[in-house]
Length: 250
Ligand SMILES: O=C(CO)COP(=O)(O)O
Image (tube, rainbow, N blue to C red; front, side):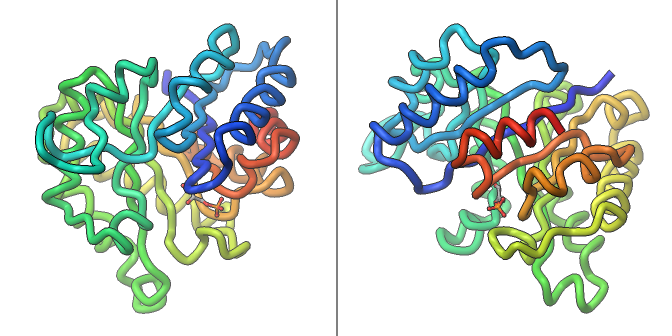
């Protein structure tokens, strides 16, 4: 059975004290959590170690938002997967549309980061999704297919089975314009079919595919209720403990 997962991508928000406070609030809300969903938060790099301590006895797991494409050495300002792993984090978000767009991360770089992440026993949360113009010109399926083929479909089956996928239509990120549950379901089912065709039935059935883009307490239950939607990657609403908690319980 595949896992339901709710992951909070804090992006470039919160100072360290603010982040610690948010993690404390969340830990306290989740003190009696008995739900089935895996819960992940992805604070900025600078907060990972300290927040790891805050959530140590909670059901919350820790993720980074990015990593370097090299193991170590003269790469000023970069953070290696081994460093992330040493903070106690277990996941790394890769391929987010903001990284692809603003930092020009190519599929080639993303595949490299994915492989290094896996080598360091971290799980990639790998993002894919089309832009508005691509959806309007009916290229959304072709776009997502190509993103998969150029990156994680090049992994071995056993490596691919370690990842989590997140479908994030770029037009829904931070815009308040959420995909309808039908649009999300259609794309998630399409992605699962591609996995089935590339690998096999059980790999497809066991893959958690998260939805991301303007997911809020008000729309989470309906999105998560779709057959092929296995939880969410939450941006803005993960910065408020109450909202994130409500999404976890959706
Ligand atoms: O990009 C996202 C998560 O990675 C989604 O962001 P919002 O939830 O703010 O739209």
